[in-house]
Image (cartoon, rainbow, N blue to C red; front, side, top):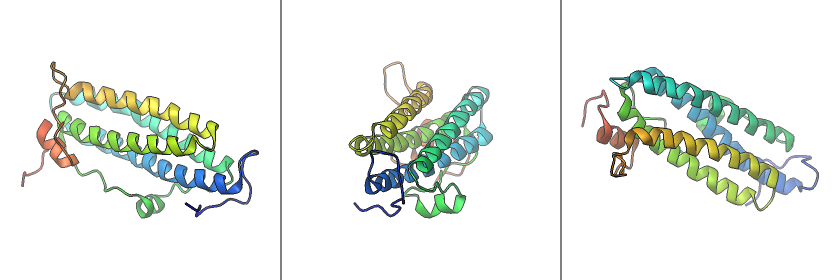
Length: 191
């Protein structure tokens, strides 16, 4: 696939064509991380119910970490000779997913939906690692480090959803709204 953002220069040892491909992949990761940090804050502000404080306080360190990941990703794009586009308009125009769909809801409902969000981000990060790993071990390492944290955050979320038998309450959900309905009270009228 040809790069849509081939830089005029890039890191020594990487061709500008390969640098452009890495920039393209990192651009989508940057959008995903910026979106995730906003989604986490949305949940933080809209969570209610008996598990409110546990979830409310669990999310702030995740937000801070994800914002750091976005910053590292944007700086890597710049180092590769690209231009990181961190504006809301660029994120919305270039994303391949829908906005988070749960409003005010109980903590477990939000966590059921958030689990699906983390799954999507982790899967896409892993796909990027596979492709980037063929070109640039430094950028690959950056994404692997991010994956380590993202997978840990998902584990924190899943700990609230898992039964003692090892099944997830949202296991059959295909959408965020389904996950919220399977796991808790969504706070919205059911249809």
